[in-house]
Length: 122
Image 1 (cartoon, one colour):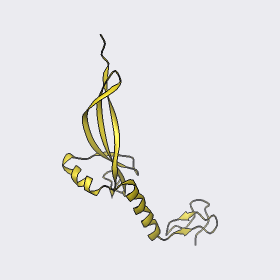
Image 2 (spheres, rainbow, N blue to C red):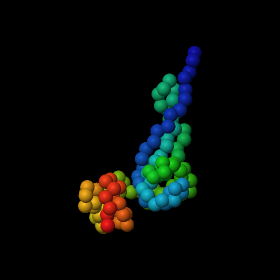
Image 3 (cartoon, helix red, strand yellow):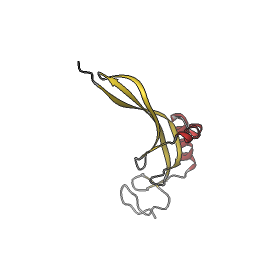
Image 4 (tube, rainbow, N blue to C red):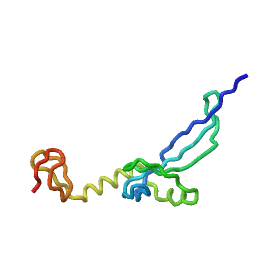
């Protein structure tokens, strides 16, 4: 009799937080994920045998494991997707917007040329 067994990892998004990435040192939105590894028998997931939490940086695409002693602190700082969208929308309203006179593309303060059309901005 042949028994086929293995494991499979499942990722669940727990929430989001704004913090400094240990890899690229930029302050950005980090996604907090939980990895569950399940034992599979005949390709059917049976039970979890490992759980780990990770922070994923959307800027440098690195994944960092969260130490068990820090998981409760991270959990207290988590924001839901809706809360994160509201925060981003609020910050965008507070930040002055600059547009290129030629192509109306959004440009950041201090830029000398439009990144879309190359027009001189001043």
